[in-house]
Length: 211
Image (cartoon, rainbow, N blue to C red):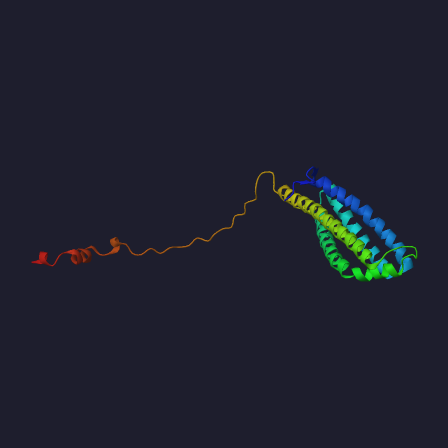
């Protein structure tokens, strides 16, 4: 488990910064997509609603950091894991799709190119593959950075949860609960002393000593 974010920032401070920047980023995107949804359709309105929900999760995380509320930090950490999985999935899908439609994209570019532009299919394919490869590398690096931030938020949540568990322990020590156990009566076997003495002596006298 991480002890520092970026090897130099405390977990609480890092979670605070990530939640604060998340609020600004997601609210900006929500406003932008809401304006685009009025002009271009429902898809942008759905994206705007998603970003509003993401901003609410960041607000919960920021409040949890300020007030040391473990449940609110848990909401934010779970959202960050979900965001990470979504980012990985989109990156993988883009990496596969980008190299699958390369020829179609280049043909569309050549058909719509300006008349004075010299570009054939081979040149376009070479340019497109280099650009797509750079985008895939960039997405991979972004996913690794997000993974590090996600682990930092999760580590702070785990640390805060342990601290809250210790805070619930009374100052005078641990609470010990006593459960009474019923007493059992054990019946012992009869001892040799309970055997009649005459019968005991007769049974232990050798047969030769009787004569």
